[in-house]
Image (cartoon, rainbow, N blue to C red; front, side, top):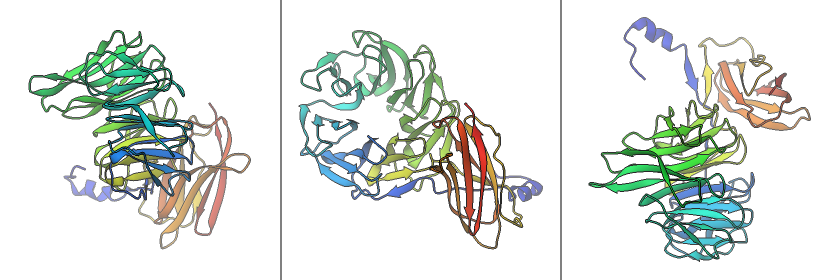
Length: 416
């Protein structure tokens, strides 16, 4: 934050503060290994690929993680599950057909860094050596080589059997200094460069690619100042978004709402299809390698030294406390706008002389709790929070504030 030069501005600054809610909570992984790839098959059952051939598994949303020994020692860079079928990839590709209990070799000397599933039998893998990208249509019993124009592939994504993208970097004078994003419309028989750049520090690469439909996609570009690029016309044009930190992985839960994670423990969220990104608070400063959301609120990220974080409110960035005056009483205001689509704001007041454990939750017409917006101790003040209902159907919802002995409920309408 820049220093304010005039005392009158400095005085007014203290009338606006920010209080960040406990949005990302650290879970106990039971290991200090680097955790490289997280995926969930339901809200409770998930897996994480680790260094040294280990896989973490949870069946209770991450409250406990079990370390699975695959029988192999290579670092698992990418891990994907399709029901009971799991594929773990790195220097080799291994497979499980019984939820991770047993693993066996599918492909030796693979040097794989990414996997793209179609179904339980068809998937692509990208590799870090020339002309070794591969496709299988029989669950790894046989493979088709897919030639490419790059030497070092980092990411792969296909929106259909024929149409896909490869991201990586290619050698030039002095080392790997040119990142490339190439596209194919004929199952890899030919590739066309869509984005490339020459860098000075030798670290340029396309770390991750994700398309949320046949036209709209994102890619993480690592360079002297990392950025994310977006296309809305299947890659004919790519433009930079406003991400402000180095990112490594992308995940979208629907067309509007997505997250990206990366260096220094930073997670960023968009609620408008990547037009803007907002930093979220996390309790760590380590590298975060992978992020996955099972629902609009519930997500996990993993990274270096056994780091696992979980959110149950979509990683809401914070609450604005807009007054230093202590309110005379607790209150809950009507949300605005109302009706809304898909984001609304809720203002409330916390009174008293000390902090109050505060809950702000959303319920459907049957009385089921569908979202927790606030769950933390708040000092007395006037607050404003937001709720993104992108993944919820139109209808009547109720939001309830509980703080100390105070409780109040109001109605709101989501109209899509």
